[in-house]
Length: 626
Image 1 (cartoon, rainbow, N blue to C red):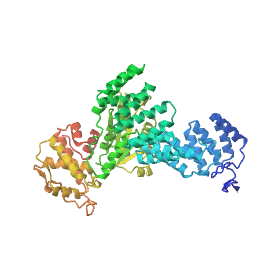
Image 2: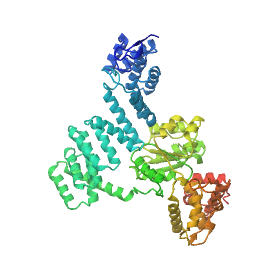
Image 3: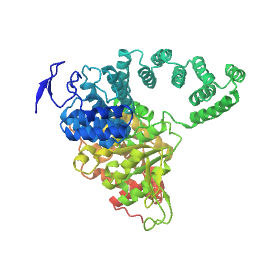
Image 4: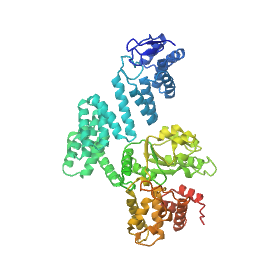
């Protein structure tokens, strides 16, 4: 294959390339088919362009630009599978085709593959080089600056989806610093500062962007955001002024109506606020509709304030690892992105999922949880998707599945690593399309849900072993939260002991008032392989089987008093005797079942587990229900 040097930059090139990938200079005349394809592409005739470019690619199989051209045409026809196929061929020949990396990133964004999209945009930034006009005649950009800026804006958006606000802020700031008149960057920067509760900075950025925008919807939306920033900062009069200014230009601006209603509600609609109503009546021909919408907004704000437990998480502790988790949960709640919660058994994965739901915009909608490992494949599919009457033996009527029951709310799929490969395929469709068919049905059911999954398994290892689909993993792996084990939460044990003891005192008669320093020291040396759930069970066992005022070392189970020090406590690791935890769990389940008169729903509630999980453990420990 012939090679020569680019006349512009001296880079050694293969003759098939029409442009130098380093400086972008043209060094090869375009053939007739390519010129016709470019003309069709520029006129928006993408199907014609696709046919012409494919002919060129067949004749020039080693031309990276030929494959790239086909990919671009397929991309604009939204045939993303074909686009990816040709883009990959182009990159195998030459790795630094920047618009190819960018378009691949866009495809992954559209499909929700956050990690893959981020990789593609970072690759584009990595390969940035000086360009000459025409370098991207089939791409979306005509300058290095425009490509760099859009890559960083997209990266910022993806970091925000993952809850990594500081990293998102960094990307937006780079663009804003490079081009102070880039309004999209300023708007995104302001939103990010708002999410970080840096209201003064957000206000400054919003004001700067507003000066550059012409009148229109974009400017009104940004002005509404400025009002929210003032409201969050506590400057209510300035907030009201911004919301009212928006409504005077657009009386049907839903967000401004809602936000102004919240201000009125929180201020009690007294004094000056009443005068504001009169001002609307005098100055706007749409006063009646605005006032009606404001009234509805105030009712909504009152309801949200009364019903929404914004800060309630039931995750007890003040250790740095837990504080980081609480902050991440709050950030995750601000988006609708899929969340994957990792961690050992008993670390509070379901509590974390509930906290995300409670702090999200879906807080007043259903939260539906399902333990995936507790059911067989057929029963799990019926539970998830529902079934039609007669779809299998025993299906005497139509059943609504968890996804359908959770419409507009949140579905929590615990132990996601245990589901079969065939069910994984169906779950992947739900995550991609938000639709499914009931078992035995043919009609697609569409739902609006947020999915949170959890597992204690190593999913990457499961992928290597062929037990878990890689495409499903990347669908789930958008925002990842790893719950810390109890042994790493230094200082949280005393708080948890106090919390569980107070809860137990409220539900049963006991004289226990606290724990001795000696007993607490013994508990702190233990490794707690069952984590917080094990601690809760131990506390219930102590209170149930003993009668005293203070918990002492002799009240603790043998596996704790006989344990060697835990890691980080100055000794070796604590390894409990084999079978001890299972024995404790079996005894606890049997006792609670007896106290509940074998009412499994009541027993499951007391144990803090689902009924399917309780059935699974009854079967595991061969507990007799007679």
